[in-house]
Image (spheres, rainbow, N blue to C red):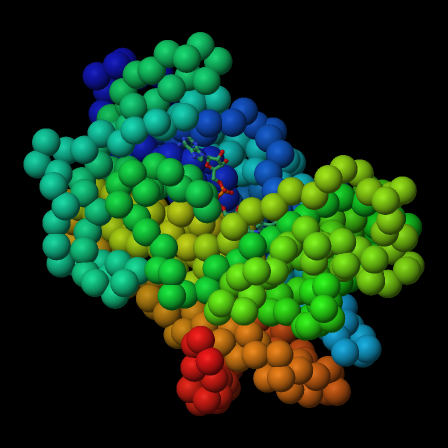
Length: 439
Ligand SMILES: Cc1cc2nc3c(=O)[nH]c(=O)nc-3n(C[C@H](O)[C@H](O)[C@H](O)COP(=O)(O)OP(=O)(O)OC[C@H]3O[C@@H](n4cnc5c(N)ncnc54)[C@H](O)[C@@H]3O)c2cc1C
């Protein structure tokens, strides 16, 4: 769709990654006039482990494009390594999620999902950066409503568009909309300009990944190492991975949780070097098979960024800290929060206004509230090496226990299994109280 300079869209989405493209798709599919600006031009490289779990596959299928994954590497479960033990854990059977995932580069994946939004009717301007929010004339910061990261209740100022810059020509113009969705990723400059902040008391992830050629590129399992070590052989809270891409390459990385002071000094590059040297020899990871220097990024998690709601504004995906703290997975949560935001925006546009936007927070709490609280308790535990060894070391002795842990970590419990999840939460909370933060 083309529109004149004074056109007011129903919704402007800033960012075309998983969260922004999903939000734009669901809005366009419902018939709303949605515009999306993406500063890069698809297909574009994005630093990631490239791992799609069954939760991501479900969202991609719901958008009608699982066929676009036909050339990607399909895998059936996780091979967990820890403390000298190895367990093969297939994805569980679940009424809502498939029992397989895919490994696909974000270069290929994100372009497909964005294309889907365009096909559904979204207007997408690529190579176009939102450089500054346009606030409503009366758009002073308001109080009451969504909870900010400090727990204080506040709303974002009313945003009614953005000044956008065409990166090829350098020209700027205004794009106006009744509602604005912030989907600009972990660094979220646009979100921060509106007033979002990360709660620094909550955990944050850092991860690094690189590509290697490997004879294991076609393995049916992804591999996680749950006891990665720093230069002094201390087990650190995080994991190393080898994800086979099926095209001759594997994606290799390390993720680290910065929870308390003791892990803040760990250098992820050194951790990566150790992991590559330490990974099972059959992957043949070495400088000779390395395809380039690793790149990394931040993983804002557990809904630690807020506020996520304003009278005309919602924040989705990494910009709102929606990554799963248990496993660092963010693609599924980007798709899901984009979709939840689209549902609230549809209600707002149908007449419910700001009340509908406030329901976005309720939707997030219903979807992730308890689960992310369990995850935060879990992180406090694994930040203490002796408790980490107790939990993971014990789990590795029992395949059925580890299968449960996998289900909890990948958020794949069946609805009838929420009882055990709550019990697990209570148990974790109890242990977490014994291991207070900063202890
Ligand atoms: C090393 C690493 C490994 C990871 N591995 C996995 C994994 O295997 N599986 C998994 O599920 N998750 C993984 N994640 C997390 C995952 O990458 C993110 O959670 C996910 O990309 C979030 O999607 P998003 O749409 O919120 O943000 P992004 O994917 O970051 O998308 C934001 C988009 O907005 C654009 N943008 C930014 N600012 C502007 C602006 N001002 N104007 C216009 N456009 C803008 C960007 O170019 C980008 O395309 C990993 C993360 C890292 C760092």
